Length: 242
Ligand code: PXP
Image (tube, rainbow, N blue to C red; front, side, top):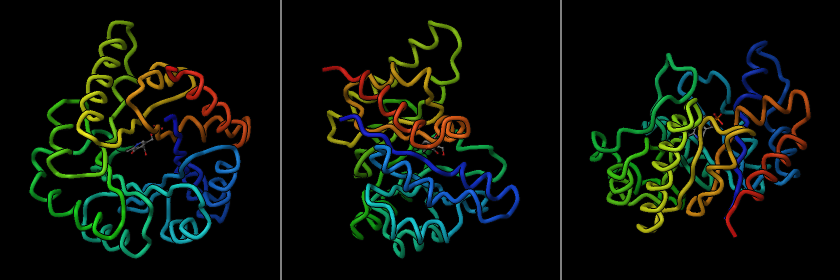
């Protein structure tokens, strides 16, 4: 599979810069969907720095593809998820000072909490993915927790500059993806993926879905959302092994 979930957080970042009502992530999501996005992702952060509760409520009513809510594993967000019922939740760690989600969830330290938290969401009919750093241990921990799937953190790959570092990171992504698939987990990947670096990750057949935000929204300022989404989707599809 070669699905693309488009994260529209940064449309809201521009809106919040002026506390205005435009640009609207709801309209952006509609355009992304028409252009071929297989899913829409939003991260409702504790500090509401970009996506607002209002966005999530309206998106739940308007998005026809899969709506993925990124959120921290807190009581407040649990209640929000149960109220809105996104198709999927991706649990991420959250720090107030960070510019974006920096690392994956520490699944080992939070094992007991996640073992209770994840089934409560899944019992409500919501698929749950855990966003983790690359390690076989993390993949096994997700399997033990019983989540629907995993999202592999591609940030280190995206930041690597030297060829050998890039290749080493790709191998780590691939090893985690192979194990994840073998354990029956839905396998997603994301963070820092852009038009220049997505192809090598998209060539890993075990990855079912790619979660991409910043690069698409950045390009859409010049090219428009439909063009930016179509080009990313084209790159993903054309890189997939037969
Ligand atoms: N996946 C997760 C779990 C994220 O937190 C983010 C950033 O919000 C992304 C994917 C998308 O990353 P980027 O905006 O760098 O494409």
